[in-house]
Amino acid sequence: MSTFPFRRALITGASAGIGERFAHILGQAGVPCVVVARRGDRLRELADRYTGFEVLEADLQSESGVAIVAERVASAANPVDLLVNNAGFGSSGPLHESAVERATGQIDLNVKALVALTHGAVVAFRSRGGGYILNVSSVASFLASPNMAVYAATKSFVTSFTEAVHEENRTFGVNASALCPGFVATEFQAVSGGADRVSRTPRFLWLDADKVVRVGLEGVAKNRAIVVPGWQYASMPTVSKLTPRLVLRRIAGKIL
Ligand SMILES: NC(=O)c1ccc[n+]([C@@H]2O[C@H](COP(=O)([O-])OP(=O)(O)OC[C@H]3O[C@@H](n4cnc5c(N)ncnc54)[C@H](OP(=O)(O)O)[C@@H]3O)[C@@H](O)[C@H]2O)c1
Image (cartoon, rainbow, N blue to C red; front, side, top):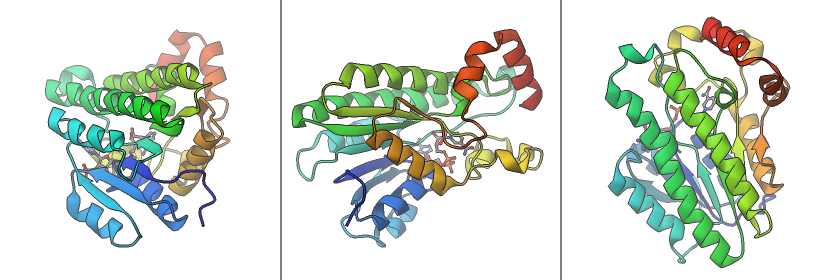
């Protein structure tokens, strides 16, 4: 029997990392999930382990992929009441050294797909009297990040956008939360080209993926607008507001 209030979840980016942990934790709690990503083999392996899981193979950087997933979010057959917009990637290095497709690709996935699916969920959930939207952002959303300029900007969008959607729907039974983790060891570091940073990042800054997932699920169940897991990062929203931007970006530049 589930200890969560969710009846059925749709998780993007469930083939690896944090998204995969969302699927396991919800599956173990008896919440059936629609798992979305490009690597269908991994999704099918995951789905075989739990009852009622569905696999949706889709590339969320393409319009057709987003349309397939949006259709499932809107569907009244086996309706989902929790959307976890988790799929995302970053790119390390100065902007001029990265291919423009890689820079804009982050906007397609981290921003465009997330907005389209959030839109679909809000429309569906409001018509059904309620639901939950958990958008995976990052602590990078609280500051400009030299050498991860596009990534941090996409996450600033996600946090700001989710906060506004949270407020618009607060009294309509639709919970919306931005989950803002710090470092979590996943495929993200290899995909974003920041694998060399892993050994240089102090151990205490690494968060446990399961803890991040549980804090996120509790946060959206309680309708917290912004959820920051871990004592290490708890003061970041406040500190980033009180610290002059020049100081913040110099520090971020040194770390990144
Ligand atoms: N790890 C961290 O330190 C960290 C910190 C803060 C925030 N985050 C955020 O947490 C989220 C999950 O990241 P992660 O660390 O778990 O990374 P990850 O291990 O690289 O997993 C990323 C997931 O996104 C999916 N994905 C990537 N491109 C996709 C596309 N075009 N269409 C559909 N799915 C796609 C991948 O699946 P396929 O490749 O199979 O499509 C994979 O399942 C991201 O939004 C990330 O920005 C991560």
